Image (tube, rainbow, N blue to C red):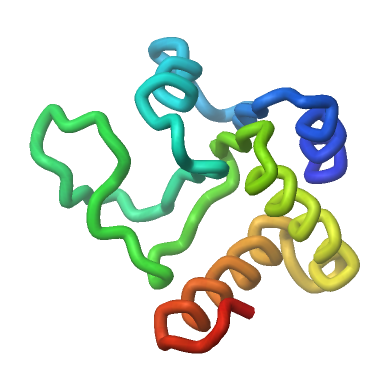
Amino acid sequence: KVAIVRSVNHLGFNVVHSDIDVVWFRDPLDFFTQQHTVPDYMVSMDPITTQNDLGDTGLEKGISVGHYMNTGVYFLRASPGGSALIDKWHSLRAQYIRQYHDQDGLYQYLAKQVACCHYGYPCC
């Protein structure tokens, strides 16, 4: 699925990836493209609690590298940053194809990036 999303993104399209077991109660495009115009990539998370105030439908507050993302729902913007991320994710497929799910490969890469940058080292 990463290869297909990459191909669509490289054609210049934003991509909303949603697993078949996800139910949308409203069109998510406004949330991804109008309300949040900066992020190149947004992904759902596994925690079932929130730090957001009741009624706050914005991005989740208090997320850290310790929270495990879930690629069952994600948005990839047709931008240089979005393309760079999907290219990197695609390049990792040989590493995770036998040991991990594609989600694990992306999580490990992003966790390493955040940890390196957070502790003052040049971003890996």
